[in-house]
Picture 1: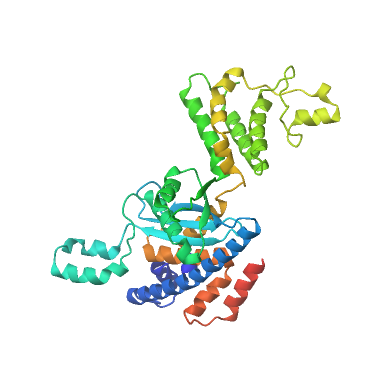
Picture 2: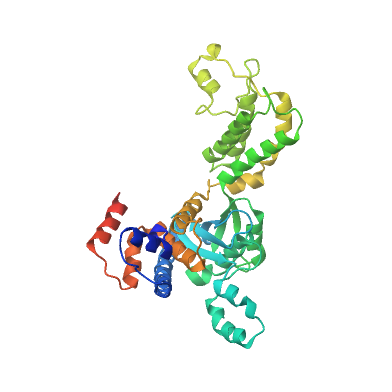
Length: 396
């Protein structure tokens, strides 16, 4: 039932409406959860080990011999900074597979139960046996979960996989990358930062919207409309994606998209435009410029207002980190898989989230066949229906 994101309450409800007897009691359910936790961890460890080996091989084939490139992203059960639980994953760029994961928790049910008995002999006796079982492994703000988790995973990469995470693909949040640099996980080797181009594109939209909001009379018809902001943002992102192997071409096309919007019939400014997307260039190539007419152009007022933003977001320092066309799409897809197995609208503790995360890693890296491996570790009989279902699902 954990594959369906359902716990004890869901099992009992299902059995009740199917006219089946109560299947299990809380104590037995808790023991089953512990068994599943051990089994999923064992299979997950094998999965991420193989994923790291595959990533290392792919990296070396692509000329990267100092380590591997990983994308990192965190996700929380609850929006904002009050979430008690969070997950953070690192995914190898070339294979798109999870190489490490960390589940963070600010809550332990047992600690909550015993907090009213502090400074008692009974509490001290309990504490001695509880330390290794405590479900809380994070102190501080929920937002810091991602930072701490990424640092911990970088620090154990050599012990876990025998390799370095040479390049880190992040979303522009400087706290996480700064945390990596400050931690110095590899002594004299410094980790490089790569930008997620999706988040870089979003920066353009955010900067333009903020400018429109704080600048009087900049918005409105014929000026910096929301439609124009969306267009410029998309053009900026496309310029980066289309030229992810050349910094110079990337910068040229970013500015080309802006001057393209400023062009008029009397003053066409398409020198740096590409024929692949510029209608004026296509008309020039076919000799049909006489019948070509530009759409209303971007005003000089708007151009001068947004020019500093374009200058800032076309800096060599930033664009250099965009080379390679890196994204965190795989991390975001993985996050969705985890929360499907441990739905945010259902209350559960760290163990359940850990199980969901481990199953998600196994499925994400190797497919549903890993569920059969988990069942095998638990000494469960694998019937033909479950076996065939996994094979058919993988083949689909």
